[in-house]
Length: 361
Ligand SMILES: Nc1ncnc2c1ncn2[C@@H]1O[C@H](COP(=O)(O)OP(=O)(O)OP(=O)(O)O)[C@@H](O)[C@H]1O
Ligand SMILES: [Mg+2]
Image (cartoon, rainbow, N blue to C red; front, top):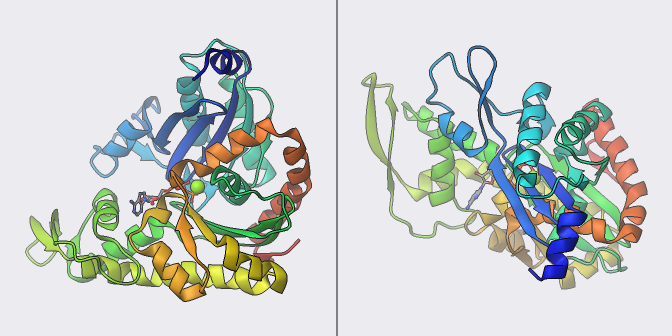
């Protein structure tokens, strides 16, 4: 980083925060990722925080009863406000640890873009960590910006952000959201499906093993020819811990229904998209972001199923936080995105009370 940039970052820090169901990423404009940690907090029996992030995730499924391991977000919404506060405050503190204590400007993305109460909770935690007022940006918009898509032109762009708790599909043009769909299917859903498939064979595995199987052997479309993997779990037939091999096919077949749901979400947004914009997509394609974008074969399979060329964004796990931070460099864009952000928030709120399933502005 140049000296001028370093000085600007130190004197006027600008942060993008992606508070995700699986991971929280904090990105500093002009610098890059400062913190990327699992969204997990561990408490002891006196409710004292004993670990946040990676070290807390490692305790999941292994901790004795007196230790409570909490994921503050589920399916894209905050389910434990106290733990969410600890998570955000601790990670913002970590991000700013090496910085001069100048209050940063913050743009935050919350999955499902949250109710007022959730946004307030995020704002309070950011303020407690020394941040200035927080602005909120819809996750799909941030994902598109972070993937480097120019959303200001008339040419439509589609982004599909596949996270731990949700998949958000959006078409953007002229700095606004033209069509959008959000489903509570993401990496966690696939992990549960893999664990469920093994359980049906009377073999029980923990969430970390199911996730590791998805990452190492998961695929969409055709198997990639990878060798089976040996895992440990609990054999219900013999009522004893045991090791066994798991094939690529077992993992891929377990994931297939979730992949179908993601595909249907993409189709539903393509159907809502005005024909002229839809034809732009043949040129600009679909960009995948989020951890789920890295599922082996997914981009190819979506290209086949939708007939729209599909690619994975560079550093897909960072896109939302990067987009949130980079928008701070463009006040005009932030202003233009503002109204659509408001409308989106209202749409999300209506989703919460079960009124609608898809968004059109
Ligand atoms: N190589 C990979 N293959 C498949 N899945 C992966 C891979 N790497 C990460 N994942 C999955 O991606 C998910 C996390 O992605 P991400 O960090 O984008 O989610 P998030 O932003 O926390 O969640 P959300 O946006 O739903 O709130 C996890 O389910 C993780 O298992
Ligand atoms: Mg996300």
